[in-house]
Image (tube, rainbow, N blue to C red; front, top):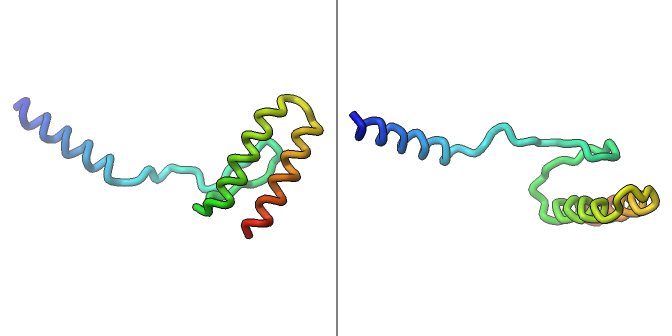
Length: 80
């Protein structure tokens, strides 16, 4: 009986690990209300990561955040 439960658990684990998580977000909103789409484009993903890092360093400085937003828009325009 134990062997059957272990075997079933192993098969279930393999099935779960084989299929990708289907509940991943396709779009999300950042703090500015901009819609960010996951495209799988490394250039675009680099821009998003850079924007998040830049905003993280700004804290509550609105001028710094605006500069980060501007740089992010320029970066995204270069990717297209």
